[in-house]
Amino acid sequence: MKLADLDILMPTVGVLVDSLYPRGAEKLLARLEDALNGYAVAHVAEVSDFGPVALASETLKGCSRVKLSTFWVHRRFRGLGIGGSLLDRRIEDWYLADRDHAIVTVREDRAAELERLFVPRGFSRIAVDLNRYGEGRSEVVLKWVNVGALSLTSRRAA
Ligand SMILES: CC(C)(COP(=O)(O)OP(=O)(O)OC[C@H]1O[C@@H](n2cnc3c(N)ncnc32)[C@H](O)[C@@H]1OP(=O)(O)O)[C@@H](O)C(=O)NCCC(=O)NCCS
Image (cartoon, rainbow, N blue to C red):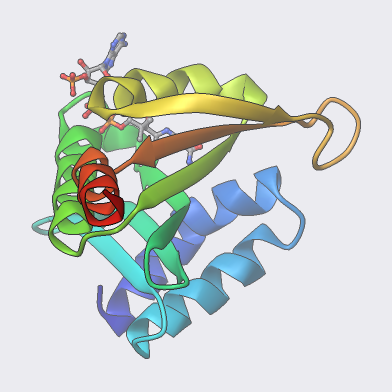
């Protein structure tokens, strides 16, 4: 991701997260600035003549746990495989970096949309955080576990 991408991301995904979460746009902007400064990770997919049309914004908890804070594809470019390839690339990177697990949370009323993409790629629903952001605004928690890292840990323990 580069600095100029903010001009396209904030009026698109920024507006969406602001409608979903308290101070959503402000927090997203802070995470993207952190990524530009090397303190967080943000990957975009780009379409030429348009710019960034998809975003995966993540933070590292400790050195082995990933929190995927925002995963989004621009409405005009959905259903073309962009979300699938972006997530495949993220998972490949987590494997290579030997991350332990990754978590993503999503509003319950939008969960089916994300699960269609995430579940076939190894994520599973592990919890529902009831009324997390107010009455009727529950969050579904999806988790991906690095099976390779797990077997390495158990081999070390044996
Ligand atoms: C969920 C989302 C990321 C999917 O992105 P996308 O680029 O459209 O996804 P893809 O085109 O790669 O399709 C994903 C999967 O769903 C399937 N799919 C796509 N459209 C479908 C439809 N209408 N019905 C059933 N399956 C469908 C595809 O076959 C694909 O499966 P595959 O990868 O196994 O082939 C996108 O819809 C989105 O950004 N939604 C909003 C998410 C959000 O609210 N983010 C902000 C808070 S974190």
